[in-house]
Length: 296
Ligand code: MG
Figure 1: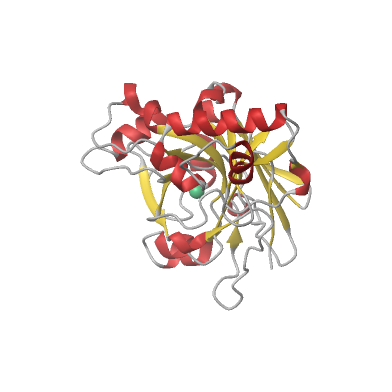
Figure 2: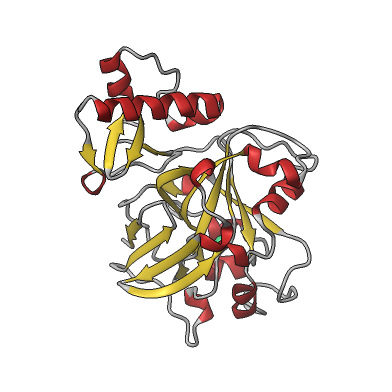
């Protein structure tokens, strides 16, 4: 099951290469769907997701109009999250090493997960420009990541039950102003300028999520591959992240957790290779489709 947010924020499904507008299709088929957006689907849970997926399959069987995925420009899956995006810092060993001593004085590989957040106003969708914020930053950087989308809310979630709270996952670019990240002690400001969270295009339901060793995270800048990682290399895996983050702190439907970036960010090069106006950044996670944004 793969879902996306279409132009008017209405719920869509991706079946093979065909995009089904689930609001139109359910009207056409006379099947009542309670969720008209992905955010509503996350609130309603897996039963509604199954119902929505059944509408998509029925629409294809009956030959209702669909569009090709390559001809659709979806919005971010959750265009305006209800609260800040949770993020993991230094959660791949090779990235922790390349950043050693550059953004803080902490040890190379963290003993406990490093959590920070990004403002909700950072979110942009596939194809939207990443603002370069001239005058504010001259060290604009990319971080390709897998983002977890929480479905079922919970608190004090044991790691053995954590995956039941995951709805699915999508591709995420944790865009960062390195100069602001290092200048302000805490990372929030360098991570929270407008446009600093491109995400999408597709949310892959956990039921079709491959094993972590088979989930790849890639980043290309102007066609040159800069990052390549696999989810199995996370220092703190998804069940551990959810278990620790939810201890005494409720997770809500629609929460987004960006799980960290592998090696190869601009700051990791010597000399550093920061983003410039006009650069094209592509982030892709297995199954999500390419997340393409240009720096404006
Ligand atoms: Mg990051």
